[in-house]
Length: 76
Image (cartoon, rainbow, N blue to C red; front, top):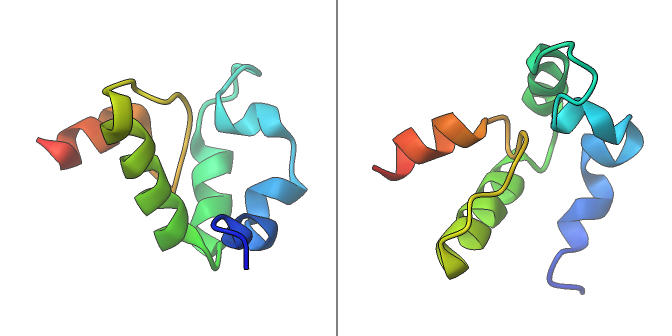
């Protein structure tokens, strides 16, 4: 099994990618609603933490139902 096999079950993979970075100006509520129903939300949130802690960069958008600001607060 691939290291990121959980991604194929992610609900975000079946939607408009712009929802996850708010390039549409519609806010993050639609993305967070989708995340709330996603079966792989814990895996996604953990993956975001790994990415951000790997090299100190901050990833954009919603991951595991959390925004960048929320992930920063959780890490503090």
